[in-house]
Image (cartoon, rainbow, N blue to C red):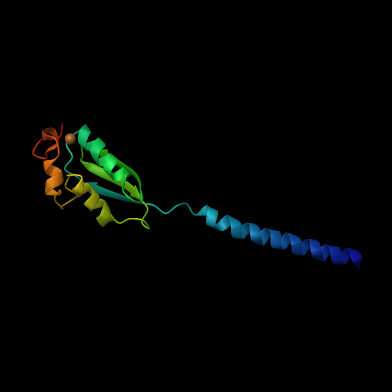
Amino acid sequence: MKIFASFLLTCTLLLSAATSFAQQAAPKAKGPATETLQLKTSAVCEMCKARLEKALAYEKGVQSATLDVSSQQLTVTYRPDKTTPTALRSAVQKTGYDADDQLADARAYDRLPDCCKKTNSIH
Ligand SMILES: [Cu+2]
């Protein structure tokens, strides 16, 4: 009878250990939720690339921002619980560049060096 009781106890311990392990493992399996936004900008050169990537890096919720100058495509990886595509487009506009069909903030655009104006071709 003693053996049977200790067998039962061992089974209970093992079962509860397995259950708590499964509960701990579940949240770890989920990575941080991120989304990717692609938008077309009016950037024309490497200076624009550096300026935009830096501006976006300081935006809340942005994990990474990469501009491809030849296609003018800005790729932003962001946390959807911290920011929105609208806020990201607005950040691009405030840096002086168009974001998709939304025009750049006029004052920010005026402050850009001549070589970065969108009247220039990509260089
Ligand atoms: Cu430029």
